[in-house]
Length: 238
Image (cartoon, rainbow, N blue to C red; front, side, top):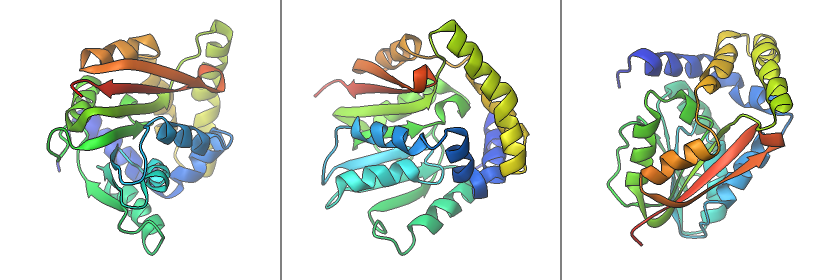
């Protein structure tokens, strides 16, 4: 796959931080990152035997949470465009109890290699800010979701409270890049995190975009004082 512009930069960024990606997430989230992923998986409303897709799976952590829910008989496809991140996910899964239950796929979030109306749920965690075209990525997620299935997006958000939003900005802008330098040996990818959130739609703004793409009953759930949110929508036509 060839990528240009933002896609090229983002893939290179994730290649650089792949080996310490999970450790950095745990440190900068104060250990809450797996709690958020677990909640996102629960909001998918799937069960044993369900078919799921995790877009931009990274190291496969959300895919693992989904796999715990859909076994036995289910399957989780985990799609990622950074080959080094896929290697990290593969090393986690090889020989484990979820081998065969999770299928790793190299692919692009803007052109998902799946037919229409396939999955019971389609998820994305901490990546919607990073795609070249947010609307195209969401449209693709909706396309491959079956009628009545759910699209679930977990990502950073902006606290509604002005004081908390300012604290969050300071943390992301000043503290996180320093942590990145110390833990990962890379400052720029974590300085980018703050920049990626500046124009990112949050709360009702993102909910309106999702509704406009054919999802109904779109809701969002905020965590850690509004610094993180999960948006959930149901595909119409069931």
